[in-house]
Amino acid sequence: MKMIDLRSDTVTRPTPAMRRAMAEAEVGDDVYLEDPTVNRLQELAAAMLGKEAALFVPTGTMGNQICVKLHTRPGTEVVLEERSHILNYEMGAAAVLSGVTLRPVRGDNGILDWERVAAAIRRNPPYYVTPTSLITLENSHNMAGGATMPLATAREICDGAHSLGLPVHLDGARIFNAALALGTTVAEIAAPFDSVMFCLSKGLGAPAGSMIVGSRQFIEQAVSLRKLLGGGMRQVGVLAAAGLVALRQSPALLEHDHQHARRLAIGLAGIPGVSIDPESVRTNIVIFDIAATGHSTSQLSADLRDRGVLANGISPREMRLVTHYDVDSDQIDETLSILAQLLGRP
Ligand code: TLP
Image (cartoon, rainbow, N blue to C red; front, side, top):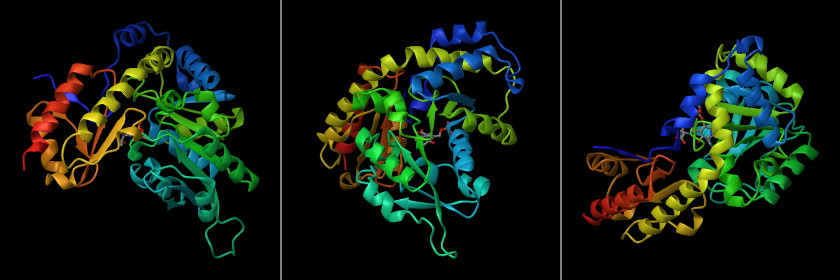
């Protein structure tokens, strides 16, 4: 049975063009900064994001954590949204590696605004109060169903933070999905931020790798920190080659993923007891609440697996489906009919 894998867009397999590019990649030792393919990837990423420099890192988590560490000092605090990846899914790395605490703020469906961020900032507090050193935002917001932050909102938060002397980092793991949904470019989204991390290994389909972008000085410091964390790789042009194909070819393919997600959301909204607002589904992530159907997400995941669909619960009542280029529209329809059958039964 060929499984329909909707657990994440991380499950995408490299395209034939990526595999060819990997096989033929020109390589060198990247710890000496001599891998020509890595260098090309970094130049292209910096140009596309409109920043001075970029760095290839093994994972999004390492990229985020390098940025958190470079922007902060131990004993300070990072303000972020309460469902953000840096807070919930990076295993406390910011505390372990940077010695910072994380102050969660609730967004409106995951989307923060300057008023909420400003209320959480402590600038020059009394000596016994933890001062804020960094703001991080997430766009698109994974656990808020791929919600996107409007450009003006992000700009206002960044301007407000900068006026207080605070840097802002963007976890843009899915920044290309956000750009498509917002009808803008990744450079426009990245513009007000001091640093951005984005992933090649999610909807863009590369087998591994993420990028961080920022000023030349910031990226030079990031090179040392990547090595310290064990992320200095050698002939890693074989992976960067797939990343180059991902950057050049994959953004144009994301439209299908967004249409598929919308189709899933509309279908799900028609199943009695399922709670989801299809209008809120703008990118490739669909989160829906099944509590009123009387099913648990763990049982539903197991039942779906038996029928050939892989999907995870993110809480006892919420399921997450993520669309990507390895799932076609017939498989989306098949998933919907299986979900309707399973959830239709008590
Ligand atoms: N997200 C994964 C899981 O870790 C939840 C997924 O399947 O969606 N930022 C955001 C917003 C992410 O969604 C992820 C991965 C990361 C950072 C971390 O990237 P990796 O997995 O490369 O460390």
